[in-house]
Length: 455
Image (cartoon, rainbow, N blue to C red; front, side, top):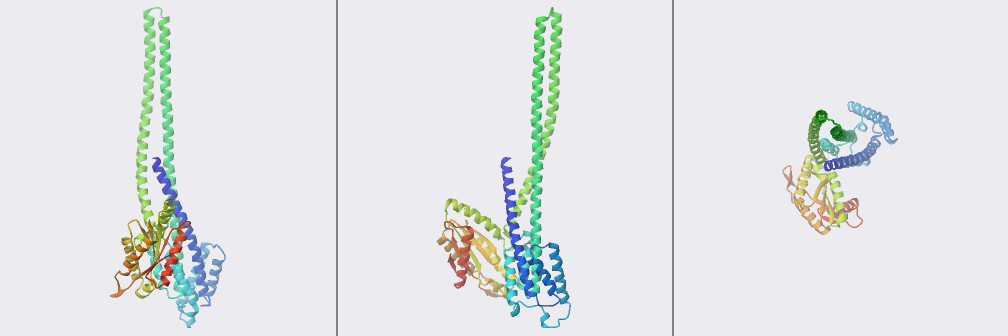
Protein backbone atom coordinates (compact mmCIF):
# COMPACT_ATOMS: atom_id res chain seq x y z
CA UNK A 1 0.00 0.00 0.00
CA UNK A 2 2.85 2.35 0.85
CA UNK A 3 4.55 1.65 -2.49
CA UNK A 4 1.26 2.37 -4.30
CA UNK A 5 0.91 5.67 -2.43
CA UNK A 6 4.47 6.60 -3.33
CA UNK A 7 3.78 5.69 -6.98
CA UNK A 8 0.65 7.84 -7.05
CA UNK A 9 2.44 10.73 -5.38
CA UNK A 10 5.26 10.47 -7.91
CA UNK A 11 2.85 10.35 -10.87
CA UNK A 12 0.86 13.30 -9.51
CA UNK A 13 3.98 15.42 -8.98
CA UNK A 14 5.26 14.49 -12.43
CA UNK A 15 1.96 15.45 -14.03
CA UNK A 16 1.83 18.77 -12.16
CA UNK A 17 5.44 19.53 -13.15
CA UNK A 18 4.65 18.76 -16.79
CA UNK A 19 1.59 21.00 -16.75
CA UNK A 20 3.59 23.77 -15.09
CA UNK A 21 6.25 23.56 -17.81
CA UNK A 22 3.61 23.54 -20.53
CA UNK A 23 1.84 26.52 -18.97
CA UNK A 24 5.12 28.46 -18.96
CA UNK A 25 5.68 27.48 -22.59
CA UNK A 26 2.22 28.68 -23.57
CA UNK A 27 2.72 31.97 -21.76
CA UNK A 28 5.85 32.43 -23.86
CA UNK A 29 3.89 31.46 -26.98
CA UNK A 30 1.25 34.03 -26.08
CA UNK A 31 3.96 36.69 -25.78
CA UNK A 32 5.43 35.77 -29.17
CA UNK A 33 1.94 35.70 -30.65
CA UNK A 34 1.33 39.23 -29.42
CA UNK A 35 4.56 40.35 -31.07
CA UNK A 36 3.54 38.53 -34.24
CA UNK A 37 0.14 40.23 -34.38
CA UNK A 38 1.82 43.56 -33.68
CA UNK A 39 4.09 42.95 -36.70
CA UNK A 40 1.05 42.12 -38.81
CA UNK A 41 -0.71 45.30 -37.76
CA UNK A 42 2.35 47.39 -38.59
CA UNK A 43 2.63 45.70 -41.97
CA UNK A 44 -1.05 46.14 -42.80
CA UNK A 45 -1.29 49.74 -41.59
CA UNK A 46 -1.80 52.09 -44.50
CA UNK A 47 -3.25 49.46 -46.79
CA UNK A 48 -6.77 50.93 -46.54
CA UNK A 49 -8.20 53.98 -44.80
CA UNK A 50 -11.28 52.08 -43.59
CA UNK A 51 -9.18 49.35 -41.98
CA UNK A 52 -6.53 51.57 -40.37
CA UNK A 53 -8.66 52.67 -37.34
CA UNK A 54 -9.35 49.03 -36.43
CA UNK A 55 -5.65 48.19 -36.79
CA UNK A 56 -4.66 51.14 -34.60
CA UNK A 57 -7.06 50.13 -31.81
CA UNK A 58 -5.88 46.52 -31.89
CA UNK A 59 -2.22 47.59 -31.92
CA UNK A 60 -2.79 49.89 -28.93
CA UNK A 61 -4.45 47.07 -26.99
CA UNK A 62 -1.57 44.70 -27.73
CA UNK A 63 1.22 47.12 -26.82
CA UNK A 64 -0.44 48.55 -23.75
CA UNK A 65 0.27 45.55 -21.49
CA UNK A 66 -2.09 42.70 -20.53
CA UNK A 67 -5.49 43.16 -22.09
CA UNK A 68 -8.82 41.56 -21.31
CA UNK A 69 -9.53 38.60 -23.58
CA UNK A 70 -13.03 39.87 -24.40
CA UNK A 71 -11.63 43.27 -25.42
CA UNK A 72 -9.08 41.64 -27.73
CA UNK A 73 -11.76 39.37 -29.18
CA UNK A 74 -14.05 42.35 -29.84
CA UNK A 75 -11.26 44.29 -31.56
CA UNK A 76 -10.24 41.22 -33.57
CA UNK A 77 -13.83 40.65 -34.70
CA UNK A 78 -14.16 44.30 -35.71
CA UNK A 79 -11.00 44.04 -37.81
CA UNK A 80 -12.21 40.81 -39.39
CA UNK A 81 -15.58 42.37 -40.23
CA UNK A 82 -13.82 45.34 -41.82
CA UNK A 83 -11.64 43.06 -43.92
CA UNK A 84 -14.63 40.98 -44.98
CA UNK A 85 -16.43 44.18 -45.90
CA UNK A 86 -13.58 45.16 -48.16
CA UNK A 87 -13.57 41.73 -49.75
CA UNK A 88 -17.21 42.11 -50.86
CA UNK A 89 -16.65 45.50 -52.53
CA UNK A 90 -15.27 46.09 -56.00
CA UNK A 91 -11.58 46.87 -55.82
CA UNK A 92 -11.07 50.48 -56.91
CA UNK A 93 -7.34 50.40 -57.34
CA UNK A 94 -4.32 48.15 -56.93
CA UNK A 95 -3.76 49.78 -53.54
CA UNK A 96 -6.99 48.21 -52.28
CA UNK A 97 -5.85 44.71 -53.06
CA UNK A 98 -4.48 42.26 -50.51
CA UNK A 99 -0.75 42.86 -50.34
CA UNK A 100 1.31 39.91 -51.56
CA UNK A 101 4.15 38.92 -49.29
CA UNK A 102 6.54 39.18 -52.20
CA UNK A 103 5.75 42.80 -52.94
CA UNK A 104 8.75 45.02 -52.16
CA UNK A 105 6.86 47.50 -49.97
CA UNK A 106 5.68 44.71 -47.68
CA UNK A 107 8.59 42.29 -48.01
CA UNK A 108 10.22 43.68 -44.88
CA UNK A 109 7.25 42.63 -42.78
CA UNK A 110 5.38 39.99 -44.76
CA UNK A 111 8.10 37.43 -45.30
CA UNK A 112 9.49 37.84 -41.78
CA UNK A 113 6.02 37.50 -40.28
CA UNK A 114 5.35 34.38 -42.33
CA UNK A 115 8.68 32.84 -41.33
CA UNK A 116 8.18 33.72 -37.67
CA UNK A 117 4.67 32.31 -37.62
CA UNK A 118 5.79 29.15 -39.41
CA UNK A 119 8.59 28.61 -36.87
CA UNK A 120 6.21 29.29 -34.01
CA UNK A 121 3.67 26.71 -35.19
CA UNK A 122 6.45 24.19 -35.76
CA UNK A 123 7.84 24.60 -32.25
CA UNK A 124 4.52 24.36 -30.45
CA UNK A 125 3.95 21.01 -28.74
CA UNK A 126 0.16 20.67 -28.75
CA UNK A 127 -2.10 18.15 -27.10
CA UNK A 128 -2.68 15.03 -29.22
CA UNK A 129 -6.27 16.00 -30.00
CA UNK A 130 -5.06 19.32 -31.48
CA UNK A 131 -2.23 17.84 -33.56
CA UNK A 132 -4.23 17.67 -36.83
CA UNK A 133 -5.29 21.30 -36.49
CA UNK A 134 -1.69 22.35 -35.83
CA UNK A 135 -0.52 20.47 -38.94
CA UNK A 136 -3.27 22.08 -41.06
CA UNK A 137 -2.34 25.51 -39.71
CA UNK A 138 1.35 24.96 -40.49
CA UNK A 139 0.48 24.16 -44.11
CA UNK A 140 -1.85 27.15 -44.41
CA UNK A 141 0.79 29.52 -43.03
CA UNK A 142 3.23 28.33 -45.68
CA UNK A 143 0.57 28.76 -48.38
CA UNK A 144 -0.57 32.23 -47.24
CA UNK A 145 0.00 34.63 -50.14
CA UNK A 146 -0.79 37.94 -48.47
CA UNK A 147 -1.03 39.67 -45.11
CA UNK A 148 -4.78 39.12 -44.86
CA UNK A 149 -4.19 35.39 -45.19
CA UNK A 150 -1.50 35.56 -42.51
CA UNK A 151 -3.84 37.54 -40.27
CA UNK A 152 -6.40 34.75 -40.59
CA UNK A 153 -3.70 32.21 -39.70
CA UNK A 154 -2.73 34.36 -36.72
CA UNK A 155 -6.33 34.31 -35.57
CA UNK A 156 -6.41 30.51 -35.86
CA UNK A 157 -3.11 30.29 -34.00
CA UNK A 158 -4.58 32.37 -31.18
CA UNK A 159 -7.57 30.01 -31.06
CA UNK A 160 -5.18 27.05 -30.94
CA UNK A 161 -3.23 28.62 -28.06
CA UNK A 162 -6.44 29.32 -26.16
CA UNK A 163 -7.73 25.78 -26.65
CA UNK A 164 -4.39 24.38 -25.52
CA UNK A 165 -4.48 26.46 -22.34
CA UNK A 166 -8.11 25.49 -21.73
CA UNK A 167 -7.13 21.84 -22.21
CA UNK A 168 -4.27 22.25 -19.75
CA UNK A 169 -6.63 23.79 -17.21
CA UNK A 170 -8.98 20.85 -17.69
CA UNK A 171 -6.07 18.49 -17.04
CA UNK A 172 -5.23 20.40 -13.86
CA UNK A 173 -8.89 20.28 -12.80
CA UNK A 174 -8.96 16.54 -13.52
CA UNK A 175 -5.82 16.01 -11.45
CA UNK A 176 -7.32 17.99 -8.59
CA UNK A 177 -10.50 15.90 -8.84
CA UNK A 178 -8.40 12.73 -8.70
CA UNK A 179 -6.57 14.09 -5.68
CA UNK A 180 -9.86 14.89 -3.94
CA UNK A 181 -11.14 11.41 -4.80
CA UNK A 182 -8.03 9.76 -3.38
CA UNK A 183 -8.24 11.99 -0.30
CA UNK A 184 -11.85 10.92 0.29
CA UNK A 185 -10.85 7.26 0.00
CA UNK A 186 -7.97 7.81 2.41
CA UNK A 187 -10.42 9.49 4.78
CA UNK A 188 -12.63 6.39 4.60
CA UNK A 189 -9.61 4.22 5.43
CA UNK A 190 -8.71 6.50 8.32
CA UNK A 191 -12.25 6.31 9.70
CA UNK A 192 -12.23 2.53 9.28
CA UNK A 193 -8.96 2.22 11.19
CA UNK A 194 -10.29 4.51 13.92
CA UNK A 195 -13.38 2.32 14.27
CA UNK A 196 -11.21 -0.79 14.40
CA UNK A 197 -9.06 0.71 17.14
CA UNK A 198 -12.18 1.67 19.08
CA UNK A 199 -13.58 -1.82 18.51
CA UNK A 200 -10.37 -3.39 19.80
CA UNK A 201 -10.59 -1.19 22.86
CA UNK A 202 -14.20 -2.30 23.36
CA UNK A 203 -13.16 -5.96 23.06
CA UNK A 204 -10.38 -5.46 25.58
CA UNK A 205 -12.78 -3.68 27.93
CA UNK A 206 -15.30 -6.53 27.61
CA UNK A 207 -12.60 -9.08 28.43
CA UNK A 208 -11.41 -7.07 31.40
CA UNK A 209 -15.00 -6.70 32.65
CA UNK A 210 -15.48 -10.48 32.37
CA UNK A 211 -12.25 -11.12 34.26
CA UNK A 212 -13.29 -8.72 37.00
CA UNK A 213 -16.77 -10.24 37.31
CA UNK A 214 -15.46 -13.81 37.47
CA UNK A 215 -12.78 -12.82 39.98
CA UNK A 216 -15.40 -11.09 42.12
CA UNK A 217 -17.71 -14.12 42.08
CA UNK A 218 -14.84 -16.47 42.85
CA UNK A 219 -13.92 -14.31 45.83
CA UNK A 220 -17.52 -14.47 47.06
CA UNK A 221 -17.51 -18.24 46.66
CA UNK A 222 -14.36 -18.45 48.73
CA UNK A 223 -15.95 -16.38 51.44
CA UNK A 224 -19.08 -18.56 51.28
CA UNK A 225 -17.03 -21.69 51.85
CA UNK A 226 -15.57 -20.16 54.98
CA UNK A 227 -18.82 -18.68 56.28
CA UNK A 228 -21.35 -21.43 55.44
CA UNK A 229 -22.78 -23.17 58.53
CA UNK A 230 -24.03 -26.30 56.79
CA UNK A 231 -23.83 -28.12 53.49
CA UNK A 232 -27.25 -26.93 52.28
CA UNK A 233 -26.36 -23.23 52.69
CA UNK A 234 -22.97 -23.83 51.03
CA UNK A 235 -24.65 -25.55 48.09
CA UNK A 236 -27.13 -22.70 47.65
CA UNK A 237 -24.45 -20.02 47.73
CA UNK A 238 -22.24 -21.98 45.30
CA UNK A 239 -25.18 -22.40 42.88
CA UNK A 240 -25.92 -18.67 43.00
CA UNK A 241 -22.26 -17.84 42.38
CA UNK A 242 -21.97 -20.26 39.46
CA UNK A 243 -25.17 -18.90 37.91
CA UNK A 244 -23.82 -15.38 38.21
CA UNK A 245 -20.54 -16.42 36.54
CA UNK A 246 -22.49 -18.17 33.76
CA UNK A 247 -24.54 -15.00 33.24
CA UNK A 248 -21.31 -13.00 32.96
CA UNK A 249 -20.07 -15.36 30.24
CA UNK A 250 -23.41 -15.20 28.39
CA UNK A 251 -23.34 -11.41 28.49
CA UNK A 252 -19.72 -11.42 27.29
CA UNK A 253 -20.52 -13.78 24.41
CA UNK A 254 -23.51 -11.67 23.41
CA UNK A 255 -21.51 -8.43 23.39
CA UNK A 256 -18.63 -10.10 21.54
CA UNK A 257 -21.05 -11.64 19.02
CA UNK A 258 -22.57 -8.24 18.31
CA UNK A 259 -19.12 -6.68 18.04
CA UNK A 260 -17.80 -9.40 15.72
CA UNK A 261 -20.89 -9.18 13.48
CA UNK A 262 -20.39 -5.42 13.15
CA UNK A 263 -16.69 -6.01 12.51
CA UNK A 264 -17.40 -8.52 9.74
CA UNK A 265 -19.87 -6.10 8.12
CA UNK A 266 -17.34 -3.27 8.23
CA UNK A 267 -14.55 -5.51 6.95
CA UNK A 268 -16.69 -6.67 4.00
CA UNK A 269 -17.65 -3.10 3.11
CA UNK A 270 -14.02 -2.04 3.32
CA UNK A 271 -12.97 -5.00 1.18
CA UNK A 272 -15.46 -3.90 -1.47
CA UNK A 273 -14.22 -0.31 -1.19
CA UNK A 274 -10.60 -1.37 -1.56
CA UNK A 275 -11.51 -3.57 -4.54
CA UNK A 276 -13.36 -0.65 -6.14
CA UNK A 277 -10.43 1.68 -5.45
CA UNK A 278 -8.01 -0.81 -6.99
CA UNK A 279 -10.18 -1.01 -10.12
CA UNK A 280 -10.33 2.78 -10.34
CA UNK A 281 -6.59 3.01 -9.74
CA UNK A 282 -5.81 0.57 -12.54
CA UNK A 283 -8.12 2.37 -14.97
CA UNK A 284 -6.69 5.76 -14.07
CA UNK A 285 -3.14 4.47 -14.31
CA UNK A 286 -3.81 3.12 -17.80
CA UNK A 287 -5.37 6.44 -18.78
CA UNK A 288 -2.44 8.43 -17.38
CA UNK A 289 0.07 6.18 -19.12
CA UNK A 290 -1.81 6.59 -22.41
CA UNK A 291 -2.01 10.37 -22.02
CA UNK A 292 1.65 10.49 -21.04
CA UNK A 293 2.57 8.50 -24.13
CA UNK A 294 0.46 10.67 -26.44
CA UNK A 295 1.85 13.88 -24.94
CA UNK A 296 5.36 12.75 -25.85
CA UNK A 297 4.55 11.48 -29.35
CA UNK A 298 4.67 13.33 -32.66
CA UNK A 299 1.38 12.12 -34.08
CA UNK A 300 2.19 12.98 -37.70
CA UNK A 301 5.35 10.84 -37.82
CA UNK A 302 4.69 8.41 -34.98
CA UNK A 303 7.90 9.06 -33.05
CA UNK A 304 8.96 10.85 -29.83
CA UNK A 305 8.57 14.64 -29.90
CA UNK A 306 10.48 17.53 -28.36
CA UNK A 307 8.83 17.06 -24.95
CA UNK A 308 9.99 13.43 -24.91
CA UNK A 309 13.51 14.54 -25.88
CA UNK A 310 13.66 17.12 -23.08
CA UNK A 311 12.61 14.53 -20.53
CA UNK A 312 15.04 11.93 -21.88
CA UNK A 313 18.02 14.31 -22.07
CA UNK A 314 17.48 15.41 -18.47
CA UNK A 315 17.60 11.78 -17.32
CA UNK A 316 20.66 11.08 -19.47
CA UNK A 317 22.33 14.25 -18.17
CA UNK A 318 21.76 13.23 -14.53
CA UNK A 319 23.24 9.81 -15.28
CA UNK A 320 26.23 11.42 -17.04
CA UNK A 321 26.91 13.63 -14.01
CA UNK A 322 27.04 10.52 -11.82
CA UNK A 323 28.87 8.07 -14.06
CA UNK A 324 30.82 10.32 -16.49
CA UNK A 325 29.87 7.82 -19.19
CA UNK A 326 30.19 9.42 -22.67
CA UNK A 327 27.08 11.22 -23.84
CA UNK A 328 26.55 13.03 -27.16
CA UNK A 329 23.73 14.45 -29.24
CA UNK A 330 23.21 15.11 -32.94
CA UNK A 331 20.98 17.79 -34.48
CA UNK A 332 19.68 16.72 -37.91
CA UNK A 333 18.05 19.12 -40.38
CA UNK A 334 16.65 18.24 -43.82
CA UNK A 335 18.35 20.28 -46.52
CA UNK A 336 16.23 22.63 -48.67
CA UNK A 337 13.03 21.39 -47.01
CA UNK A 338 11.19 24.65 -47.75
CA UNK A 339 11.98 24.15 -51.42
CA UNK A 340 10.45 20.66 -51.24
CA UNK A 341 7.27 22.13 -49.75
CA UNK A 342 7.14 24.97 -52.25
CA UNK A 343 7.82 22.76 -55.27
CA UNK A 344 5.87 19.59 -54.50
CA UNK A 345 3.39 20.72 -51.84
CA UNK A 346 3.07 20.17 -48.13
CA UNK A 347 1.62 16.70 -48.52
CA UNK A 348 4.88 15.63 -50.14
CA UNK A 349 6.82 17.48 -47.44
CA UNK A 350 4.94 15.63 -44.72
CA UNK A 351 5.64 12.33 -46.46
CA UNK A 352 9.37 13.16 -46.51
CA UNK A 353 9.27 13.89 -42.77
CA UNK A 354 7.49 10.61 -42.03
CA UNK A 355 9.86 8.48 -44.12
CA UNK A 356 12.99 10.12 -42.71
CA UNK A 357 11.67 9.89 -39.15
CA UNK A 358 10.97 6.19 -39.51
CA UNK A 359 14.38 5.65 -41.14
CA UNK A 360 16.10 7.32 -38.20
CA UNK A 361 14.16 5.15 -35.75
CA UNK A 362 15.18 2.06 -37.68
CA UNK A 363 18.88 2.80 -38.09
CA UNK A 364 19.97 4.30 -34.75
CA UNK A 365 21.60 1.96 -32.26
CA UNK A 366 19.26 0.19 -29.80
CA UNK A 367 20.60 2.31 -26.91
CA UNK A 368 20.09 5.61 -28.76
CA UNK A 369 17.06 7.89 -28.66
CA UNK A 370 15.71 9.87 -31.61
CA UNK A 371 12.93 12.48 -31.66
CA UNK A 372 11.45 15.10 -33.93
CA UNK A 373 12.58 18.40 -32.45
CA UNK A 374 10.32 20.57 -34.60
CA UNK A 375 9.66 21.35 -38.24
CA UNK A 376 12.24 19.52 -40.36
CA UNK A 377 14.69 19.08 -37.48
CA UNK A 378 15.36 15.83 -35.62
CA UNK A 379 17.63 15.13 -32.67
CA UNK A 380 19.45 11.99 -31.50
CA UNK A 381 20.85 11.17 -28.04
CA UNK A 382 23.88 8.88 -28.25
CA UNK A 383 24.10 7.18 -24.86
CA UNK A 384 27.59 5.90 -24.08
CA UNK A 385 29.12 7.29 -27.28
CA UNK A 386 31.83 9.94 -27.56
CA UNK A 387 31.91 12.42 -30.44
CA UNK A 388 33.98 10.10 -32.67
CA UNK A 389 31.54 7.20 -32.35
CA UNK A 390 28.57 9.56 -32.58
CA UNK A 391 30.02 11.05 -35.76
CA UNK A 392 30.36 7.56 -37.21
CA UNK A 393 26.71 6.74 -36.48
CA UNK A 394 25.63 10.16 -37.78
CA UNK A 395 27.48 9.59 -41.05
CA UNK A 396 25.65 6.30 -41.43
CA UNK A 397 22.30 8.02 -40.79
CA UNK A 398 23.17 10.77 -43.29
CA UNK A 399 23.96 8.12 -45.89
CA UNK A 400 20.66 6.32 -45.24
CA UNK A 401 18.74 9.57 -45.73
CA UNK A 402 20.66 10.38 -48.91
CA UNK A 403 19.77 7.03 -50.47
CA UNK A 404 16.06 7.07 -49.60
CA UNK A 405 14.05 6.82 -52.83
CA UNK A 406 11.67 9.79 -52.97
CA UNK A 407 9.48 10.51 -55.97
CA UNK A 408 7.08 13.35 -56.75
CA UNK A 409 5.06 13.64 -59.95
CA UNK A 410 6.85 10.47 -61.10
CA UNK A 411 10.18 12.25 -60.84
CA UNK A 412 12.95 11.25 -58.40
CA UNK A 413 13.58 13.81 -55.66
CA UNK A 414 16.96 13.91 -53.97
CA UNK A 415 16.72 14.57 -50.24
CA UNK A 416 19.74 15.08 -47.99
CA UNK A 417 20.37 16.17 -44.42
CA UNK A 418 23.00 18.15 -42.54
CA UNK A 419 24.03 17.00 -39.06
CA UNK A 420 25.76 18.70 -36.14
CA UNK A 421 27.30 16.52 -33.40
CA UNK A 422 28.36 17.60 -29.90
CA UNK A 423 29.61 15.69 -26.85
CA UNK A 424 28.97 16.58 -23.21
CA UNK A 425 32.04 18.04 -21.50
CA UNK A 426 32.71 18.97 -17.85
CA UNK A 427 30.59 21.95 -16.87
CA UNK A 428 28.15 21.46 -19.76
CA UNK A 429 24.37 21.67 -19.54
CA UNK A 430 21.93 20.06 -21.99
CA UNK A 431 21.15 23.49 -23.46
CA UNK A 432 24.84 24.32 -23.96
CA UNK A 433 25.49 21.03 -25.76
CA UNK A 434 22.40 21.50 -27.93
CA UNK A 435 23.59 24.98 -28.92
CA UNK A 436 26.98 23.55 -29.95
CA UNK A 437 25.29 20.83 -31.99
CA UNK A 438 22.99 23.41 -33.57
CA UNK A 439 25.94 25.65 -34.42
CA UNK A 440 27.76 22.67 -35.95
CA UNK A 441 24.61 21.91 -37.95
CA UNK A 442 24.61 25.36 -39.52
CA UNK A 443 28.34 25.07 -40.15
CA UNK A 444 27.48 21.95 -42.15
CA UNK A 445 24.77 23.91 -43.99
CA UNK A 446 27.16 26.72 -44.83
CA UNK A 447 29.80 24.21 -45.90
CA UNK A 448 27.68 22.79 -48.68
CA UNK A 449 25.06 20.69 -46.83
CA UNK A 450 24.73 16.88 -46.79
CA UNK A 451 27.55 16.52 -44.28
CA UNK A 452 28.27 15.99 -40.58
CA UNK A 453 30.23 18.46 -38.44
CA UNK A 454 31.44 18.15 -34.83
CA UNK A 455 30.75 21.11 -32.56
